[in-house]
Length: 290
Image 1 (tube, rainbow, N blue to C red):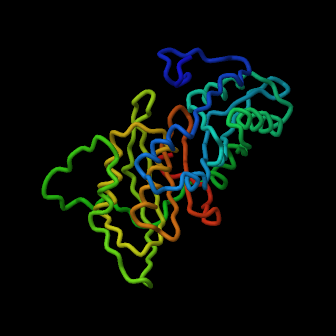
Image 2: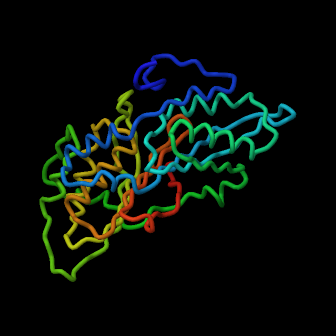
Image 3: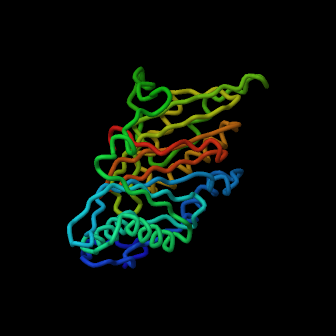
């Protein structure tokens, strides 16, 4: 297995028996060290305030009579965990449960939580949802705020394709305003795109931001910045943390929420969220593309 784990292999053998060894951790420090180089003033500890919500839609096992059961799951992972899980290794691990017998749903939850927590060296909360409960417990919502996806509709020339995320786009129109002029901005974009750093496959997502700052925020500059991620190779969590760090650096907000809802791949979607204070942590949710 390569340093990228199963995701980087050309062919994959799917296990048919319980295989917790399939889980492959990736150190968060790899992405955070890159952020530290581009944001010298950022406190790396600020990137550990938040949660990653993973939704898995292909969870199955056998009951005590050998009859297949199906469910959807949410895994809640603290941003303080030293590791994330390689997504394909999680898919293979969940598939390894398909022909394993369990006496109850609680036993399934307990085992998955134990295995994920061991892999990440941090407690992972596991919720299992029956399909008939999905409309209330995994309901699809609309992101908060204003969509900024049309902010560049009056461009005079085609937008150049960026090679890397460009945080300087944020500061072009930064204007310091009076001491008492803090304003809260709430917006989202469905145009977040980045690439898997292992396979180079595209990852699409919706980015949501809520920020209170004394600096003016330009929708056009913000959208240009988001679009500068189109060719960036980064895991979902690293992308959100990079955006969080850049907004903290350029806008010095008194409060900040940055979250992303990435579209599903391999039956799993990943939803990182970083906040300036845990009291701001929103509830997990799903969007229409998920």
